[in-house]
Image 1 (spheres, rainbow, N blue to C red):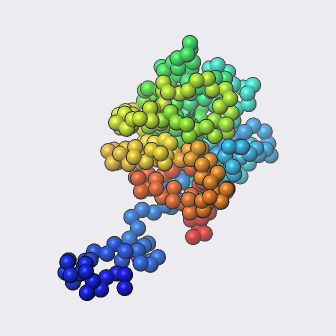
Image 2 (cartoon, protein in one colour):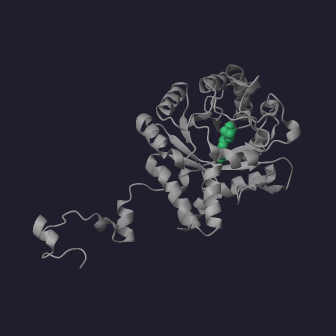
Image 3 (cartoon, rainbow, N blue to C red):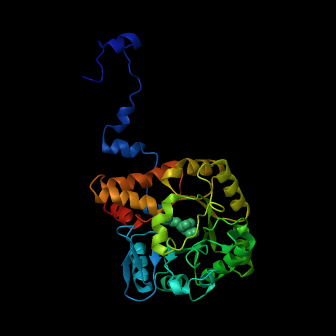
Length: 343
Ligand code: PBG
């Protein structure tokens, strides 16, 4: 056979035991592969980001994210219930803010009655068993699309952090379980931690977007929350340079020091090296965000029949586990959870 007989030339050179090690033995059958698998994806690894929109009984497709809709609060509650039925541990809420509510300072982000707070209250009331994560940053609320206060072409750091603390507090008051600062201002994790402690929210977790890069892969997300048309310039003075990894470790170290319970690397697949280094270095609960552009790429290819959808999705998610992620924020969460349930 092709596996080599005792009389094969290789056996003559290397001895009768050639080859002593045959890695293919452990791959010979499904049971053997399952027995030796080093990593496994489960539903507990999935965080499902959803987009929320004003109104009732309203569902609006996001053109650049086929299969993703913006949902009014009633539909968001229904989505949360479906996610909970599948045992997805957490959903992440992102608001589409009506243009009339956006201003220079992103004031609507601090309104306790804003869309995200309303959705959080509704979900925590009707689907209390699911965790709710809220993003902290001003970009869904500012008329210029930046994550912070803009003054003469500069994003102000400390003034923005003050606003983010209030934003985190209104979300925590609404019942948010995990505050996730995605703004990349310096010192914001520590400031938010102090604000939460002072307000008695000692059990609210912080998942820091610790290593968040200035990436082209956020494009479809900005369409979904309506900030792309408005965005003036880019975010390179606060989000990280895609050229850097050591800097990611310094960012993560600071966020842990400042009180983060969990850290995140974002985007996902193009940054698996960063994810692996972060996990190896800090051994913290570490998450990857498979962002909107990654979702769009996979959907574009699978909708064209160029890739097998289910296999491509599951392989992409398993890759995060292999690199060291404890969980993944992914727009595929529901599809993946269904696949995991149905086997
Ligand atoms: C807001 C925020 C962004 C994403 C998550 N939170 C966009 C940005 O930073 O411009 C991107 C998520 C995605 O692309 O799926 N700061």
